[in-house]
Length: 180
Image (tube, rainbow, N blue to C red; front, side, top):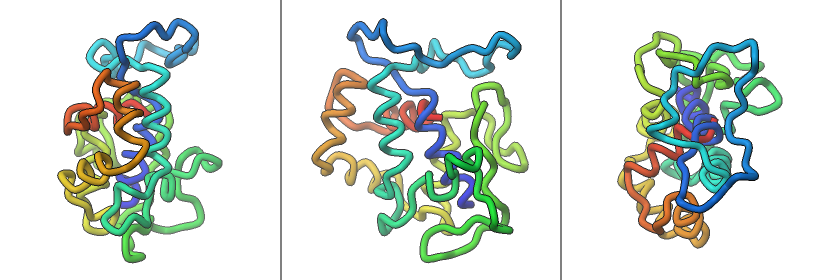
């Protein structure tokens, strides 16, 4: 449960969408020489510097949760390989406990199944599970969009990443998957 939230947030930091400006100084996602080619299709969701920054901000922002108390980073802790150490199960909104602990979320672009049971088949869909889970973030995705649109910084950051201040389900999904 909280694992899904953290996965969602973590994903926001790795695989972000691109805008139309030249970002030649941004290295993007490095490809280690001893790794296979990523399974994730970056042609459908290219990484940009602006998109990465947006995904990282969203990953650490509790705005995605119903009462703005839980961020993806609360369960996907960077210093612990983006996992949730020292807990038998992850905890989320209202201090509720999930059934499992958060999985680490690095190297997600090389995976074909997500969560402990592999029940989510595509990286772009992972964050939505945590947001909607009643024991993780417990928020309606439509309300997430409303909160992001009303925030003083997010419309401008979406404009940098997507070329428009419009915050939609499609570009939010791209940003979430693009951050980790």
